[in-house]
Length: 114
Image (tube, rainbow, N blue to C red):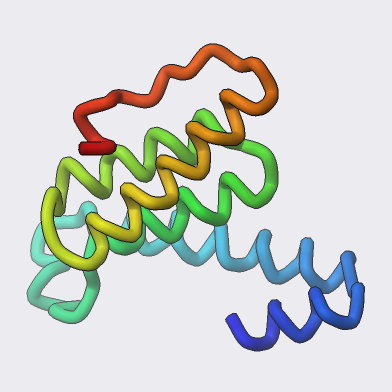
């Protein structure tokens, strides 16, 4: 993350796009692998909710806000309380504000924002 922030400060847009694409691929692969039977035993530190939340943030950053919302909501289904849930709710609120600012019909579930 620090690497991406440094690229952003330097204005290196192509490097930022490359890093974001790599992050997306890594999170998507983690979700695929996490879906296999026995994955929890092989990777006990892996957190599906956190992975969905992070992928949602990545997708939002590249303008895929509907897909981002789906992953953020999935994270909250998996882990409705705790630090990941609170951060995810905050990000959903940001998406809702963006949608309202641009006059886009808001499809975010109010249940997730409570």
